[in-house]
Image 1 (cartoon, one colour):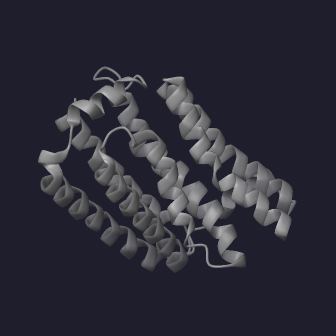
Image 2 (image 1 turned 90 degrees about the horizontal axis):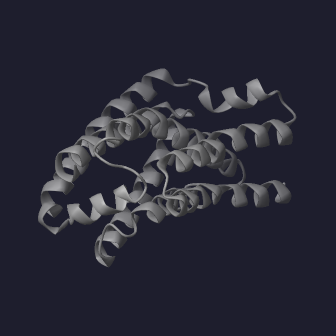
Image 3 (image 1 turned 135 degrees about the horizontal axis):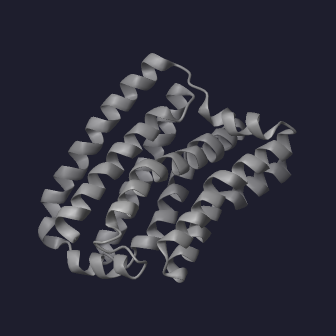
Length: 220
């Protein structure tokens, strides 16, 4: 069991490494490929190998749809909460955000007005699934078998910070780090309540959708 926990702890840092690779490569496509490998391929292979089950069963484990009524309710209220928090935060901090700096940093990884639609579709439809499959369906699910795994929400925040650390000043960065950590804890709680990734997946989808719309309006 100890060996498994050590391997899982190492795996939990792989998304951060993937973000570093994306940052250094200057290519969103390379970053996306690395994230798919880290968030999806490696967990499926690892669970299959350690648990001695088929790749199909390993893939399907995080996708079991349980507690349907509670899942739908949490997904609905999670989506509404995402909308309210992001929109209210935008209006509160609007005059403090440097959208030109954000645009310049996005362009360094080839996110431009001409590629924004492609990137937006990836962020909306691919990113939420990859992250929820990995963080809730793999990391939190396994960690929580041995001890309380809610703290993994902090690691969820960490791998986002690699990409956006140049976008904000220090106090904004600190505030966003705390906020993302709380979001990670909330998503872990959603998984714990429903025993599935679907409520956090939908909430994550709505949040990314709103952020993409804001990005297009205010950044590009």
